[in-house]
Length: 180
Image (cartoon, rainbow, N blue to C red; front, top):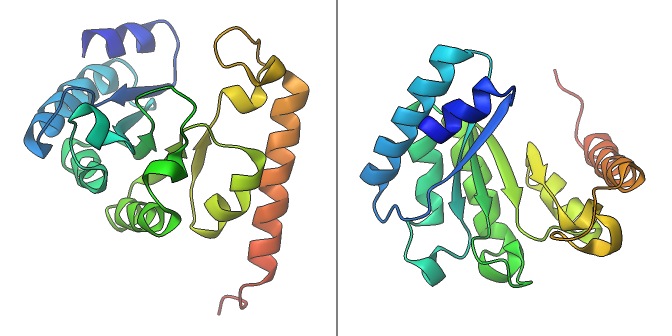
């Protein structure tokens, strides 16, 4: 909670908190309630994201499908799935698209935003858009040379990534029946 508050005081408006080390939903709820309280008392408009791990089985953390409920019960604004171990494996290597779709459905059913990340590439954007992801987290895909550690974020890569997301969203929207 103190680290999240420090980020908020420093001007961050999106505060992502990984549930690393939380082995039960109750532990995750306790952590996130403290974070939400600290951040929202400083900046009620800050977006607090409870982040679980698609590769939770590798690190002994809470089940990924418990994260939307943790976010909802703690008052967080969004639920996210990311990868914990940064070894080149990707979100869909650990959690198939149908499980990611269930994660998004659960987040939306609880009134939360749904965020997905984990070595996301351009060719993942169609699937991520199709399942209704609100936020796509990227780093390596928009860094110089694709290097998330040493490469600098490149504005033209961010713009290209965003344009691709928007294209998929337009295609998906065009395929939906008109709202009545």
